[in-house]
Structures are given as structure tokens and as C-alpha cells.
Image 1 (cartoon, rainbow, N blue to C red):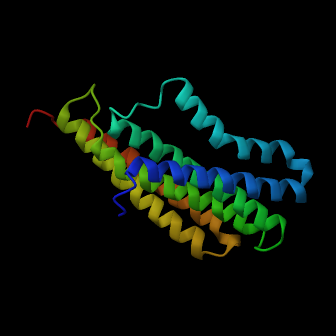
Image 2 (cartoon, rainbow, N blue to C red):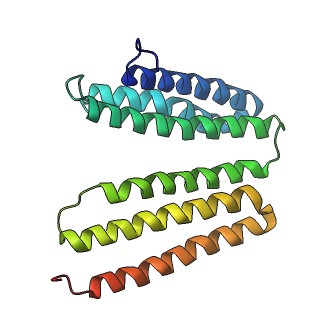
Image 3 (cartoon, rainbow, N blue to C red):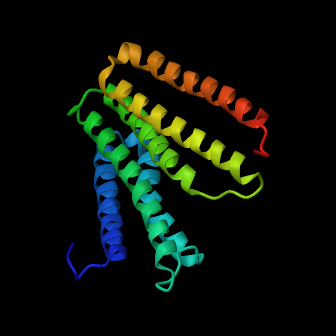
Length: 194
């Protein structure tokens, strides 16, 4: 890593690049399909407005809190990647550079990636309100369930033909919900004094 750039500066640059990509591809989509102007405008303005609101409302911590500042920028960059990706895919389908079904596939792939990221972070987050043992068991269960479900959904949406992908994808989520409910009931019924 270049010693001249601190991690926050790199995140700021990434966010600015994502904002520019969103505006560029939003404008392309707008020029090709003007009837969706409000949608494209919303997509293009989401990132700069979120960044400005974080700064104006004081939600963006100062340099004295680098971990909290990094967390906010990570969230903005993650959201920016999703928004820019959606606008890029929409523009590409509008220009007929990729098949129309990839617009749907992108949305489902993005959802799977979000599940993976959330699932990875769940066990690391300390939640008050329930016993430490039971709370940790629930967090681990949900974390693993989110990650595995996200990975399976990712494979489904990347490889299964579109005619079957919706049914298989819904099946994956349905199985995950049933598994989670059964596992939560078992965790809840466990004796927590041991």
C-alpha cells in the first residue's frame, strides 16, 4: 500500500469514483429510456445525498475516531457499489449489450452478497438483552445461515437457467427460513445455566 494514502483517503476516492460512475451510467440509461427519468435521477443522487447527509448531520465522525469513520465510509462504498452496479447493468441492458435477464440476476446476486456480508459481521457484534451464551449461539446461527444462504443463492443466480432460477432461489430462501426457525426453537429451549 502506498504510504502517501491513508485508508480513509482511499475510501473517499472509491466513493467519488462510484458517484461518477453512477452519474455517467444513470445519464446513459436516462438518454435511452427517458420515461424512467425519476428512477435514474434517484439512482444518480443517492450517493452524493447520503454522503452530504452524513457530513451535515454529524453522522460522519471526525478524524479523532478513525474506526467509526472507516465504518461509515465502508457502508457508503458498499452502498455505492450496489447503486453503481445497478445503474451499469441497467444501462447495459438498455443498450442491449447484455441480455435483459441479467438485470434480474444482478439484483439477486447483489442480495446474496449483502447476505454474505451481514452474515460475516453478525457473530462479531455484541448485542445486549439476552444471556451471553444464548445470544452468541443465535448470532453464530444467523451468521452461518446468512453466509451459506448467500453463497448458495450466488451460485444459483450465476449458473441456473433463468426459467428455473426464480423457483430454485425462492427454495433456497425458504429452506433457510425453516432451518433458522427450527434451530432458534432448539437454542431457546436449551438450558442456559450450563
